[in-house]
Length: 86
Image 1 (spheres, one colour):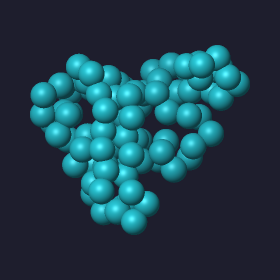
Image 2: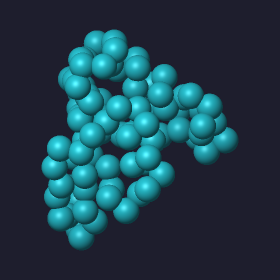
Image 3: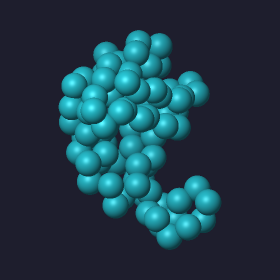
């Protein structure tokens, strides 16, 4: 239904099958990581309103911005953080 890749609370990817979206899968994956890592961090494409809304609803806030993505392409990223929510 979904998977999450992370390292020490830095979330690198979170994917949920479209058929399972809005069913709590993404939130459950985040909470599983939060059980072991108090502070969670991730980057989200600024042009992805659905992902931005999901992360805002799960307690993330913007702490920075990059004009380009990790490969240097012109896709702005928002750097998000969720502090100490369990």
